[in-house]
Length: 72
Image 1 (spheres, rainbow, N blue to C red):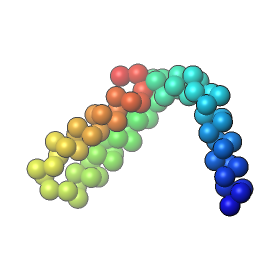
Image 2: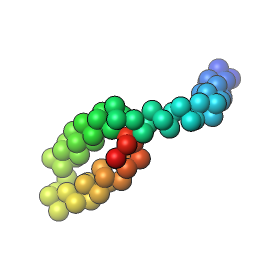
Image 3: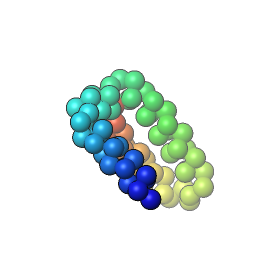
């Protein structure tokens, strides 16, 4: 398991060292376009399997996630 622990530590170190660049990418127009497409697809898929009265909750969750990714 030491190999996994080392990999996890390296990943954490990489994220910490590059957090400004990662934030910049997450707030980019390209990230916004991709996240919108993914969130729309996932949202529609979820709406097909949950009762219609939960559509508002699905939309709210989708909106909250969308605020965290991209530039809008």
